[in-house]
Image (cartoon, rainbow, N blue to C red):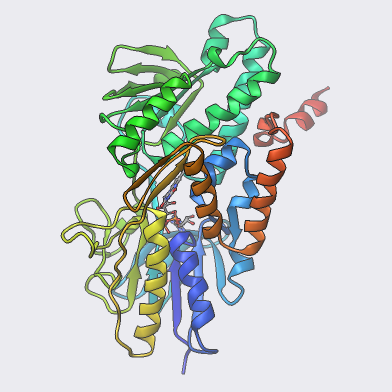
Length: 432
Ligand SMILES: Cc1cc2nc3c(=O)[nH]c(=O)nc-3n(C[C@H](O)[C@H](O)[C@H](O)COP(=O)(O)OP(=O)(O)OC[C@H]3O[C@@H](n4cnc5c(N)ncnc54)[C@H](O)[C@@H]3O)c2cc1C
């Protein structure tokens, strides 16, 4: 009898943790697992802001799928469609012909993508903050702009280089801005002619609050903290246009910038629309409380791409965050095994424990089980919580070593922006 194939689409939080659990629990020959992901690694996104600030080496926040999922087949490529009716998925490998994969069981976990709005110039001028590549780029870019500003006599170029705009006051935007501002403030000590106050850091948020994840009081406290650090927190403000990197806000402010980071929300990965998956009005895959895709008994889903009922808040859905994703993966793997073995499934239920956020070195904010924590204790909680959640002892140890070295040595202030154009020197030499 053929061994059933479990296809896992997406090797992120839900995909990787599900595969890890299945790999440990499956008996020999019970099923084979294929994980298809565009990347060959899982990204621990909550550490991206610290990676951008250089507190953690960027390679340490990603987990190589081939190393941790030794019993699984790893396919590097973009899944372009998933069909339930004939149990097939189309994959576009990075090179070579497209593949059609048959599966017996499906785990659909492609996560989310940045939700862009039709704002003139946004797609051309902006960058998101969801991937390790974006975090590395932003670190190099911010330090590179400081290099430019310190070396020019042109006031316009200098002003533009030292203006950094973040749109979206959720977790990703606030943490990314706060960590990068903290890094740039530290770096400015080594740039003759650039003082911390010469830089303009702007947070633009459409609603009247930031960091809704930690509650209104802590959101207000965070806004005050950022303002005291010199960050312009513009709440109730919309980005109207960003053409040619000229920013126009609806409060009448207009200026030029080389840095526009868009973190104003996410939407389910659009691949869920390519196929015959049942979707809700926001384009999320409809899931049952057992994490099965509605109308099937062989396909499962979870994470940012799925509409999973939150049984602790009747009538509502689980928010798209890592806290749920990791626990859904555990339940999902358990229910898939139960399906394979003809046992009873259990519903997914998790009461949110709260949220922690880092706002730069030794600064943080948290709301945990209703208790509000701020400053150093919150920052410490953020680091210890995420360190315990980081997959593999190898990565945990490396991150701990990064932090420990950071206590004794100053952060690196070099921009390696040239890695994005590594052949430039060589082609220049060829022309000489
Ligand atoms: C900067 C930042 C900070 C965050 N901080 C926190 C935090 O502090 N606490 C918290 O709870 N949550 C946090 N989150 C949210 C959390 O990271 C997400 O909710 C979680 O990653 C969702 O898990 P997922 O498995 O659904 O998606 P992901 O982890 O994003 O995994 C999706 C996977 O699918 C792959 N994929 C996508 N498209 C395709 C395709 N077409 N073919 C093949 N593979 C594909 C991707 O490469 C990726 O590996 C943060 C997010 C960001 C961006």
